[in-house]
Each structure stands twice: as structure tokens, then as C-alpha cells.
Image 1 (cartoon, one colour):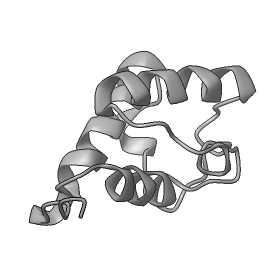
Image 2 (cartoon, one colour):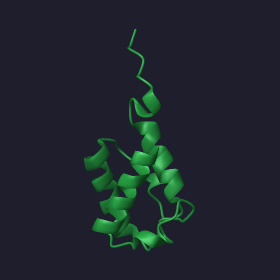
Image 3 (tube, helix red, strand yellow):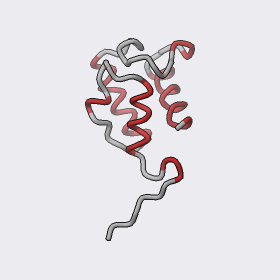
Image 4 (cartoon, one colour):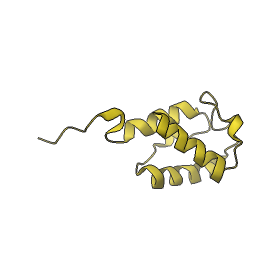
Length: 88
């Protein structure tokens, strides 16, 4: 979702000083120069911003930005206009 991507881009530029013009969906978090400490901080920031817990496999240095955004969208209820089904 474009909103999620824009928010993640904003977090990367403001909190992690990644230059805006270097952020591309196919780049891994390692290619964006995020080390393990930065990844831990990123998970915390994403949790605060989106209210979801990011699985560790989606917060590894080999994760691409596109994979991270897709994972965040999958975790968020109501994304893409879908309303979660009520429990029986």
C-alpha cells in the first residue's frame, strides 16, 4: 500500500538518515546500511507507528523494503479496504 511505503520511507529518512533518493523497494535493509541495532530500533518504531508486531524474519538484513511493506500491510486490519470478519 502506498501509504505504508511512504510512512516507512519517512521513518528511514528521519530516524535512520537514509537519503531519500537511495530508498528503492528492491533494496535489502542491509543495502540501506541498517545494522542489527538499527533493525531492532526499526521494529520498535514500526510497532509504535503501525500498532503491529513485525516478525523477525521480516526484520532481517536480507529483507527487502518491498517485503517489509507487504508484511506490514498483511498485519494491519482493514488494509486494502477489507474489513476483518467477525468472530463466530
